[in-house]
Length: 324
Image (cartoon, rainbow, N blue to C red; front, side, top):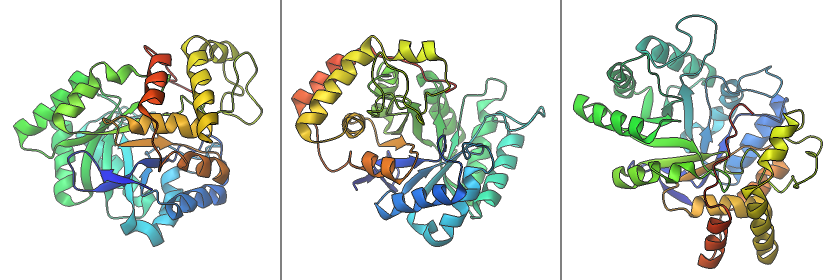
């Protein structure tokens, strides 16, 4: 495994992070086995949230992770998030001080730990003054309940405003952003990449395999294989996503992967972490086999010609995978 600084922060994280949105796992024992195996293979960044859970909704990911933390806590960098709706009440979503303070305590109880290493705002809250949110995060950092703050799904101008506001308040800064980024969705290159380079922010790229479309499990013109993420989803949307730029991207990925003796998923992940702006790529998996395949993306480099070919094939790609 390779480790890099998390933006300008001193903490070092693995180039690949395990995301705990268990879309294909419903067994707590299997989820625990995947987490522990990832740690054994060098992953030290685990990405969580206050509403991620098993595929059948029977248990929250933070509760599962708690068991692993009993023996691995000091070796890991744990993220969690706040913003999304977690109940029907008027204060059950958003980035108000009320919601942030309440949810961090709930996450700490579920995780059975005294701190969250990186606490992310999961979205931009237009109903709450940014000053209120950032002061709440700064208080949590001062109390030691949160070590670093970050944001997810913020537009570039919103990230810039958060950085400026934190500086004006002398509050703890945002150290990282989390956004979708893959060969099928390069939208953040337009404005966010320039900002993170200038400000030294870490970038956590989620959905680096395009919601599984770049995993090697799917083929254009065919139905999703049984047991894969897209089974049961909008069939028309699936076929639309597997056309256009996706055809060119999968063609180049398959060619390069075959020449390198790598899998399609490993090649797609390697392209993501080869971008200098990207600190870490967050992957999910349906089991240990997928986990081991994904981790094969580390330890080798695509050539300049291979990067150029993939860049060209995916030029302008911006496929959205929201609500999958």
